[in-house]
Image (cartoon, rainbow, N blue to C red):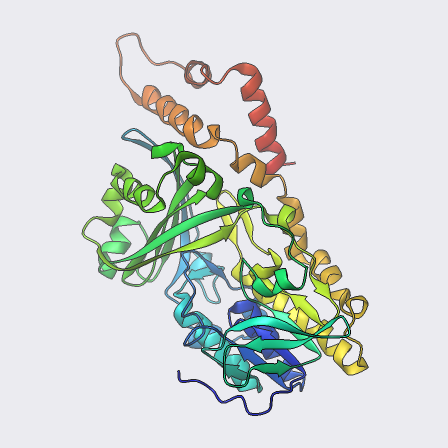
Length: 438
């Protein structure tokens, strides 16, 4: 996609970032009759995005009922598998759903480079002006309110009474507007992902899925370097997205390379069997927000709104990782509130405050609050170093034939959980119950 001439430098709204949040905001505003510029720093939407995960179809079903026929879907996810790994042992928990494979699907895998381009195309069809290869370096101000952006192009300055920042996890514009607080490294992880080519039939055999179905596999274990994190494999049509995510604090503390962590993960026997023979096509690294509810910034100020990852709208709950449809939801909500504000000619923080209120009342706000105790649980090092090994040892002894006979599970749990200690074990149990059940 070549550079788009901007022409008129005055807009009703400027959306910075053509990811899912930005494209949905631009699509909705343009559809409501506003003159919208959608700026994208990459050569095309999705060019700068790295993704290994599931896109849930909740928002797509609502706004684009035809998406199954037109969106670049790889595989609907019909199987969720969780593996506990420890020194040549593995214990896995499995859930498969035939209804998840029926259109319009619960969720699916996709390449963001293709999906984001498709979604931005919907915004263009609605009337938004997509401007690729356009970096917004700074905000413009008038009488203390945001009034546009300064871009790294010949046009220099673009003016609008409203700027919607969808510029990602480390939102530069959000920081310049004073909306994003000082960043805490403990709130972030670093993920690395590579794409491995494998025939479709091989993928389906190894991951126990029907033709056309897909699998999301997550892995927990005691990793080299005492890293706190986990691995993942997501199936595409003829490729696998394989990666590892580690908390930044543990990478810095242990002085361990994320690439070395990925290599060690791939050497785990349970993982090596799944990816054997895969040819690497690409790889990259990406910062991941982990703190959820605790890291939410302020979302509005005079003339400005934050959406998507810039607003901290990512749910990390162990075996649940959601973000893309949260971003889409926030983009639509922001656009609808912005529409009313622009119609009234009042884009003050007070007029825009309905956006965070609606976000909090909806499923995104409820989910982030519901799982707000999950990040502290995932910061517990025993989740990675102790419990996976203990569970694998329990399973091994339960299935092992010995002259002294079998032991019942409670005895095995006490035997292998002994190194944890009763008080510490009870504290961890309460932490897990509060995060997942209470």
